[in-house]
Length: 295
Image 1 (cartoon, rainbow, N blue to C red):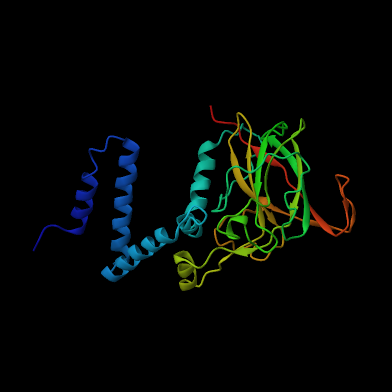
Image 2: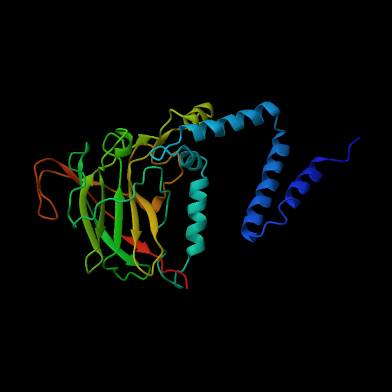
């Protein structure tokens, strides 16, 4: 009988990477080999299952485009994206002893679009977008509560029907997106819409996987924020709508209790910023805390 057993095979593959010059790449590749070989042994992976997995990955690549990154969606729905986010935020650390912790980070998601316009505080990025008008406000501070003037908020969300601009046409125009700078007291405010829950794209391999495993395909209502300031760790996070359907079963595991906010409903009339509203509207307040960049 051959002495070439499973353990020897794994070690031979690991040894094949021993001349990798980059030590981090060598660690990543050898650890990947060990874990994927261990997975195959643990589940006694059959040739048919192995081939089905390869075909799934091939289909994921074939459907992916710049506006439809299916591999990001796959990572999100497997919780890998949130694991990477969690590791990155823990690695950044930087909180002084006794200081308030930084705002929790969460997934960027597949619909970020760089290049949103720089807008004045108070601008309505929800004009022409289906949904209920909402006034967003709050402050950006460091972890000790000191306001950060000129902090940048890069904001985007789906519309009230649960669709992002990039999903609406082959050549979309930006909607419900904008970049704002905080004032001298670290304050921000702008108008948009109250985001609705929505299903993740389910017409590809990831959707097939979710249906085959009888999983929820929806995300609760949320608005995305990237918040940054010199000398501080850039934050990518959401503000979630309290009481939104699926708030406790986010398909990408991105919801955090600390990010759930009440969207207060108001009757028509003069809003906080003096704007005269002819229809009911909502308001949501949230303060962001940024950790200092590690020394």
